[in-house]
Amino acid sequence: MVVFPLLAEPDAYRVMMIDLVDDAAARAYWLDVFANHLPSLVAHCAESDAVSPDAAERAEQVRRQFGAMIDTLRRDWGAYDDRVGPISILNICRLREQVLRAQGFDDPYRPIKQRENEAALQLLPALLDELDALDDRPRLEVVVTGIAAGNLFDLGAAGSYEQYQQNGFDFHATRRRVARPWRVDDVDALADRLLTRPPSRAMLLVDNAGADLVLGMLPLARELLARETEVILAANTAPSLNDITFDELGEVMDLARRIDPYLDRACAEGALTCVATGNDVPLIDFRQVSTEMAEAAAGVDLLVIEGMGRALESNYDARFTCDTLKIGMIKEGWVADVFDAAMYDVICRFEPV
Ligand code: MG
Image 1 (spheres, rainbow, N blue to C red):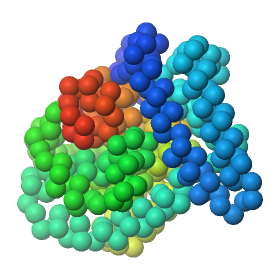
Image 2 (cartoon, helix red, strand yellow):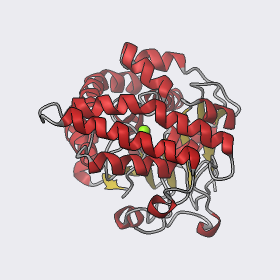
Image 3 (cartoon, rainbow, N blue to C red):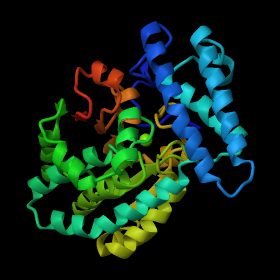
């Protein structure tokens, strides 16, 4: 793992926007978030491995062990410093993954991700037709709104999880609800840049499976490709919640290529490629990325970081040596407060260098 070469001032880089070491209220809040999320995680563990006779027992172990870790952290927030580093949302996510792996659950959200990928791919042809009928600027606005809407498919946050459990995920209904202007809304500046001076090479860090990737980020990739921008899609190496992994991204791209001749040609010509970030949590520490991702960053003049975890809870004030878009929907009350925003508002920050 290496430092991401596009990170400006790596020595001054602060990963997390939310500090749990020096803020007892933040600590208490986020430990509750992890504790409240645990029952749904346990349920997905059992579902994902229903064929093994001991799945329920191992899922129960996940509940006990990770629950005990949360309780330990409430009393002694330095308890796992040796294991994962100082307490932070990112490091608690790492602990959770360790517990899951130790109990033999490599990817509890695999079935749900597959279902949502299939559902989103079914909607893709009509969405691409809709987009292709629009003029440049309105199309770009619809594309970016689709990214915001797709990012609601997030099974790590309580609000979006509950909505998903009750009603499933409806991309078009969500898109209608995420009306601009947003709390931070740099869509016009982004459109100006893309329409007048398209990047030569863009790296897109994708977040969740399903609509988030297929109906949100793939249309942006296609939009860039149409302007002769080379596009690299960067996805987590290891599974975490409902984030798309590098391997799954390959599966989705194989199917998307059959749907859209344009994406097919871009993949065949090498204009659209995929890379594994080396990351294994819903946030990202740009001091530890894969060498493949670091190498792929050569010549990148637009970086897109998508998702509440990677772009808002971490990295929002990180600076890079190229133009950067940070975009995500807010699905947690504490994050809303940090951004002085309402729940389900959107942050879309475009930072030219
Ligand atoms: Mg995610």
